Length: 295
Image 1 (cartoon, helix red, strand yellow):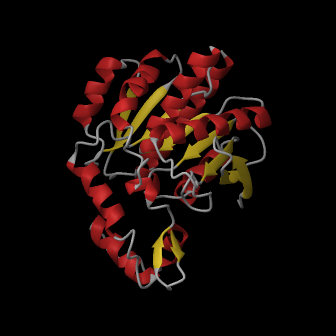
Image 2 (cartoon, helix red, strand yellow):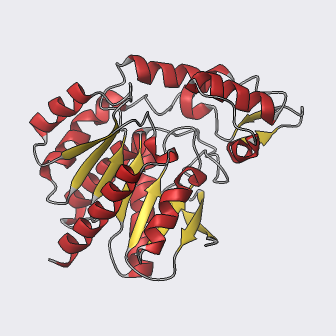
Image 3 (cartoon, rainbow, N blue to C red):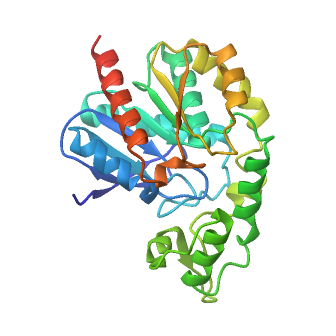
């Protein structure tokens, strides 16, 4: 199945590039984590489309083929504003509120978007939240390790795609893939001939970077998860050192309706791994969200 590329408009009139899988059915909005692109969701999007739904994978602001915002605004609330704009446009196009399938910080921003929309309108923005490996706190060794890796080559880049592939493989502790070409979608070649990550470095270290408002939005994120009557499922790779089980249990004390599932053998960002348990959890959740939407 070949997707159709589409363009949406974000909260700052920024262009958001997306791939749309499927022709008809309720919409599912898939938002990637930091440093990734819409292509990280391709496998899940194909599964969703084959189940009779429309899957929309989006390059978030400053990532992939989407605009790098001139203002350098990459705070959680900025991404939440984009998510709100996307969800409203998808609901208008497809006649139904989308389910948010998100990874990492996008889980936080989807909850913030729902909370802000409900407070201002009294209506739901989304139909459910399937959240993969959202770091409930930045204060974990895994979260710090991910951030350090992302920044380590942001400025200098790589001499070749092969060098980038070797670096990623070493970080993950896995053999380098025989064909590193798939990684090229996450890179862009600069005028100096070097390959750099396909995201705006200000996302991580600019004045309005992704973690600059993390403490300020924490209470709103928890409140949105606590107050919503929509289904919320946290999905954790059982081997993840970013989303710790102890933090999930603490989160559930504040938002007891939130459920979670461990995906055996998976690491952080389980979306990129072949895993039947993940697929079953995803399709089961979408069925649940569809039923809740119709009730």
